[in-house]
Amino acid sequence: MELGTPGEMRRELTDLTLSGAKQATAGLLELDYHAENEALEHIGERLAVVDDSGARVAVVEVVGIRLVPFAGVPWEFALAEGEGYRSIEHWREVHRRFWAAEGCQIDDSSTVVCLWYRLVSL
Image (cartoon, rainbow, N blue to C red; front, top):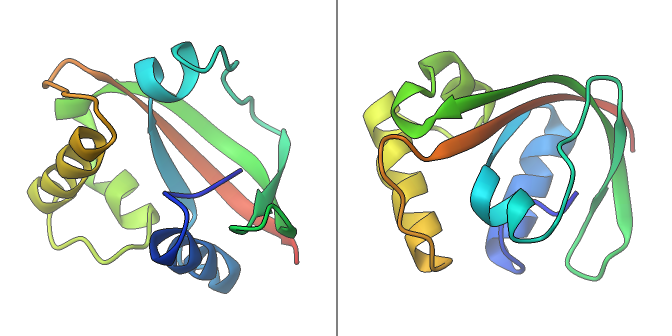
């Protein structure tokens, strides 16, 4: 599992995962799964968390997965992402900007993959 984009963002998100503060991550069904021909994760699946060089830094286990319209992502999920969002509106603003920078314009009905995980090993 590669968190965010390479560089500072990936280092920050990986560090949050390693500290236990980050226990969830969001993906876009269209961008991160359909476009890359990737299957959805499943509960109990273990994923290697990798750094910028591709080296494994931890293993996490998927403990929850839910497909939600962008406008329906709950505040509890935003909190579980552990990135210091001030409100669900702040979460939406940051994610809309991030996905736009990745070339994906989204609307309130865009499907978000909400993935919860727990740190298994470092």
